Image 1 (cartoon, one colour):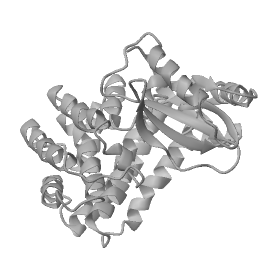
Image 2 (cartoon, helix red, strand yellow):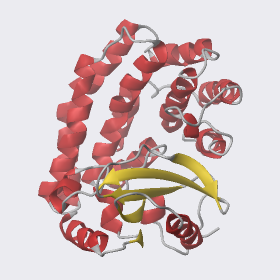
Image 3 (spheres, helix red, strand yellow):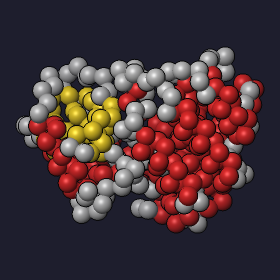
Length: 324
């Protein structure tokens, strides 16, 4: 299926929705950055953002419509300056792949965001928002249950990749963030910094066979999860989402990007454990390989990211300057 066809299917789903305060809908993520005639990768979904003027419903998550895996998120209608300041909202809205706009407000907002999106002042504002979230690692609570502790560490620990992508005005992708950051850093002669990013996570020296073995154990855990789609992460663990979380990760390993695949393996393991303790030992083994197996080691890993912030900001400025 082509990207344009998938967008059209998403638009037809939007047309059947009745959300109070509905202000429009647009495509975000990779499907907004790729050309309409490009093929939709089998391991990708369509990120669909519903803009609401009023009370915002909970995230709907992943589900299939007309053969297309959609991931639907609701966000509030915000003024242009708020959108431009957001590393989450601005990239998608700047692309202008609008599927519904009942009163023209979304088109007006897109025009304002697109016109200012590449200005260094807004890029730095978005990077600063990400860096503030990285700084929360200083308060990492290692007394929390294992799954919660891992998620509170691994997400902010991965955000340097999104600083890189934001600085380069690239798509701040989720699952493939380490792959995308690698591509940017190699393009601008900063390949050594990519190795630093992997080292902060603890996976720089992992062999392909090690990562493949961890994915095999994750696959077994994933297929046993008694998920509930109404609970947090529930729609990320369905059989429909398996193609992304498991097959997409295996694809990276087969491409020789096994170290870049580790982050998503950790995330998915921890999400599985929020539903069932089955797989605790497997996750613990992975954390041991990353040097984050004990609370003290995880705190040390978090500290390495914090200590790397000055270097991250230096690379960020290099990228902003080179892409002006």
